[in-house]
Image (tube, rainbow, N blue to C red; front, side, top):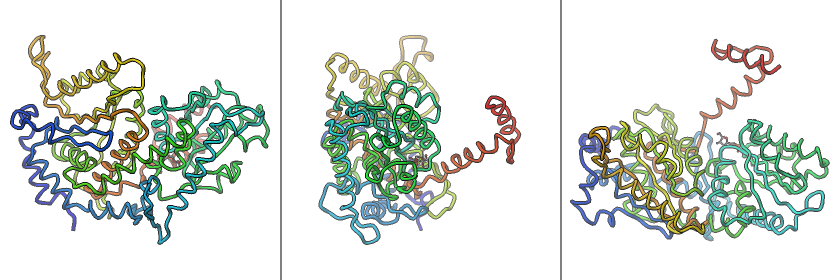
Length: 527
Ligand code: F6P
């Protein structure tokens, strides 16, 4: 019986935590001058420095024991081999198969799914090549110049973040826009600048039942039909979904439906045809390089001993802070404007995966699980919330992320960006007595951080970075013995929105007085 918080190792960590915060991270470098070399890891163009953590050798040893005594090894093997580890939806979890660049088969119910994965990639290639080359023509005979991806959550955040991160590698002739919010401002602002004759819409929705996406898709279609005809829809609307019937009913032609599978979770789906806008933006070959980078991280995660395993180390440091040093949040601070969407992407990846309070058997758990993930680019954060991080009362672990080389033609800017990040990471650890009035100006320091450095922002390195965080989330969820791959909590909101929108008109339904009062206010402004 796996009883995490009753384990000997857990109790050892609780003991070690009693005076952990009294130890100075900076002192650990004095005691061990080789700390930086010993507490950094590299995989291809991705470097992790985890030496500025509140992490002694004893603590790390105990954390590794926690991983050894957990179902990690078994569940990792199960995930990659297509076993049903998403136990509440009775599905395998195979985003790793989408980027499997080896000749190895991956079986679901005894059938190798790699041939259909390769077929879906081929379909992506043919379509994206045709649109990017100008071979694909719209109803007026013009080539496509603008792509509008209509989707939300995992059908938006992943492709959106990747397209922004790799914008410099993209084709400046092909503009990719993302519409996700049901707020009319979002779609109206995008469509207002576009010509239907040169615009391609991607209706991106795993279930093809998400209210926001369907409303946005229908509004886009109405906008399109102001200038074009129903026959023209096929040249300007494609769908990415597991629900072919609903896509056909919307009016998408069979050959324009890019399918993927129920065993791909929304927040893990950018490697599937949900990544179509990525291929349209940066080209199919670059999309494959993204997959290759993630595949390299998959192999690292599978083959590397736990003590040298990047996702495992990051996961264990997080568990140490969350479960033993009471960290409630995890800050993600990319010193890279191209990664400004990364915190939002990681919010869904982490919080929708590990925001759970029962274990895989459905039993209530008695320890903390997924943290609140938040963040913003540096150096902006220095002028917004770094004050709290330096002098506040809260314990907030930080992941700093940057690229050593830039494709921008402004080396002095990049130098300033990197030196700011290094200075901040150092100041968080070392603190400062301050030049002003003693207690008001002093920064206590001893505030931990990881630094992740990409050699440069390439599809390969970005793919490895994303897969690193996917596997970190998986390792934490496995040690916490939760199902990281369902999301029952979000279904409630979806259901209530549908019910309430029906009840508000005739003031029916059984709602609390506050909701009823608000409903009548809204009703007054609806009519
Ligand atoms: O947020 C709930 C959720 O189901 C996510 O898991 C998913 O990425 C998003 O909504 C969109 O779902 P769909 O792709 O089915 O429209």
